[in-house]
Length: 168
Image (cartoon, rainbow, N blue to C red):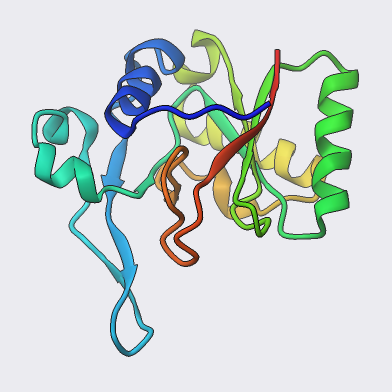
């Protein structure tokens, strides 16, 4: 199933509904300059930027919410689908995203308040354990790791990072 949402609506949904207002997450704009070098705008928080339509229009990356874990599968599409199948079989709720060329293969897991209320070290260890279990990118254990924003063109490919499956 695929569907789309505008960027402002999605950021509001992340903050209010999925993040339960625990996380004033960071946002930025990432792009490739004329020499192919990766560039980043200044990081600004959601609450700081939410009324700035011009800045919101450029945002294409965000940090994780305090109650979120993201599994990034850098391996094959088949490996990505195996993780989705395993989560579905275990009855774990998730949102799986990717671009049409299979970049930004992310699976988002949102936990109720217990994870957001954990000390940072404990929360990051929980994310790390999930990443190790599924053989995913361990950098996403950090609260401050940027990921490509959902419902938005990926900063490298310009392809939409779209919902692949909602595992509810």
